[in-house]
Image 1: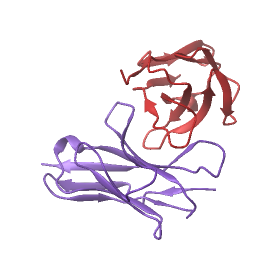
Image 2: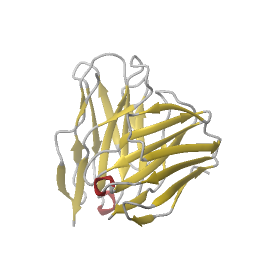
Image 3: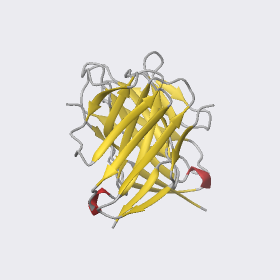
Image 4: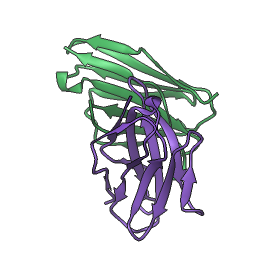
Length: 114
Length: 115
């Protein structure tokens, strides 16, 4: 099973809403990632978890709050977002947090902030 | 800091024709190189990667890429494309000397295969 699943597929939210994105993998991977991808652009790294601990935060605004409840699950909590936060949010995982590792991406959650 | 350049933002090509998608990276230090493909409305999938050894790496669906250290390039090629190859292709570099374990992605090349 080389699948990373993400829910929901689509999300529309207002600027005062609180919502969460969920990511799950059952490959036994110990590193998990959140990326943001705007249209026609490459993915931008937001957060990296390694062994359930946050190891990289790419200076992401606090309205994005990641959580890794266990080694298979990764959440991204959203609060008071801005319209410019509308994007495709991709989750990925890899066996370890190493430069040689392949990252396996989920299909993404397409977020629209009104 | 490492950077990746994909000079061609779009490449239209007829079906069964050959294609080359160009990727150059900035530093000649040892790096690891990846090509990912993103089909419409999907996440990214690894096509192939170069870590060490033979400079020519191949994927299971007919793509190949050649690592050229002197030219700091990792161009992706396919001798005969299919309609189903229409997608966005991203080159990525991982620099083991940076200590960050991050991918640096290029801006992507949109391959459009025409019937």
